[in-house]
Length: 284
Image (cartoon, rainbow, N blue to C red; front, side, top):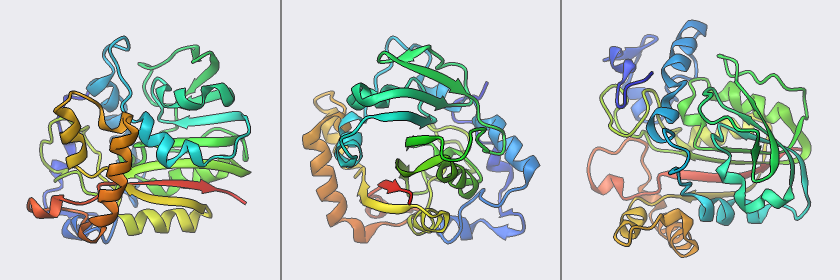
C-alpha cells in the first residue's frame, strides 16, 4: 500500500532519461510520457492504490465534490438522448454519473483498485475492469457512446497512449468528457501531502496537442478551478464545485486570470491562475 505523500520519483534528482528535469517543470515536455515498459510498470505499481488510500477508506462517508462543475462544463453540453454503453475511466465509485444516471443503460468502470467495486451505480448495472499495466484497454473498437475521464490522466505516465485508447474505444458520434490539472501540482520529486506518489499535471499546450493528434474534435474547452474559489466556500463548509454559483464564478475568474497560467509556479502571484481544463470532445 502506498504511503500518503511518498514520492518514488525523488530518485530522479536532476535528470530523466538523460533530460534535465527543468524541461518538464517548464511545461515544454510531459514527464513520464516517453517511459519504457519497466518504468511504466513501476509507475503503475506506485499509483495503483493511490486514490483509494487517500479518500476511499469508507464509502459511507465519501462525498463527491464536483457535481456542479461536471454539469456546468460537461453534462449540459451533451445531446439529450440516452447513452447505451458508458465508460467511466478511473471513476471509482461512479458517483460522477448521478446527474445523468436516468439516461444511462450500461456502465463500465476502469479502475486499477478493487476498493470501489459494486454491482450497480444508481440502479445501473456496472462492470469493473482493471486496465493493463501499459494503459491498453481490453475493449473492442467503438465500444462506448460516452466516456468520462475526470482527473485521471495526470496519474498515468504514458498519457498519449491512454488518450489514444479512449479515442479508439469511443464510437463515431460519441462524446468524451475530460477534466485534468494543467499545472505541475508542485515538485513531484519531493513529499506532497494529500497527493499520490506520481501525479503531475499536464501542460495545457501538450494537453491540447495530444487531443488533436489523437483525432478528437473539441466541442467545448474551458479553464477551471481557480484556487481561491474553494477556499472561499470552505468558510461556509461547502464544496465549491457542488455549487452552480461557485462554478460560474470560477469560470469567470479563470477567464480573467488565464494570462497568468504557468505550469510550475514558484511564488504566490504565479499561483493565482486557473489550474485545470475541462473539455467536451467527440469523434467523427
